[in-house]
Length: 309
Image 1 (cartoon, rainbow, N blue to C red):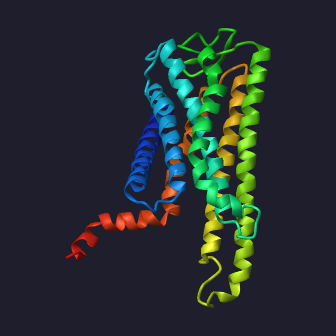
Image 2 (cartoon, helix red, strand yellow):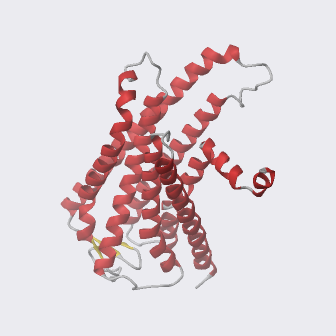
Image 3 (tube, rainbow, N blue to C red):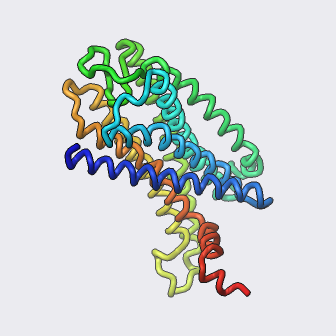
């Protein structure tokens, strides 16, 4: 292994280890809050679903990629490749759907009482679980082609090889079928990313209008940056920007890799590393934006335990 391969291997290990640890923590934390508190937030179920999707992504694709980066080859057969890649693709679709659902839920939640969404607010919590189940069914159906075009390692010079992952290979099912699959995936991603962007834009507009109405109530000592509305808008913009940029980058780079006549190992490694960035970074954004996390860590900190009689 050369220095570049070792560097990618270290990055993989750090990214996967941190991502899985933080997502599992969020999964257990929000599950505990729902089971122990009768006044839990309805969005906690969505956050559980997103943490679960991120965990599956990192387990089913991150661990094999990390093993491959450290020189392991041929550790999966055809069945293993099909199952792991199918679960990965389904989980990736779930991350898209869940992020979109979270944006729509938050947009309706902060909408004014005089808006058309006022009647939907009371029924919204009952719609979360059915939406999560529907997203599972939708993505399991859409990603069914993965069970057909993923095989074990093959010779990359083979005419039907579309993408060589070293431990698994994606083969071509034919030009027409590949075109249908690409169009179907693109429509799904554009649909959910579009709704997520619209919901986030609506939140920015609502918070901006609210900020203008209450601006005269803030004291002169409270600067513009310290206002809670501004901080909330920044968190929304950061999350949406991260999501759109990373998944947009993944779609563009994957298309380039598939259509390249000579595959670039360095470009493929960069593509894989960046592909896990959202799953590894989004839990930190969730922790940062949740005030209950601060209370949780204060209770667990040694200083607070020493002050308790």
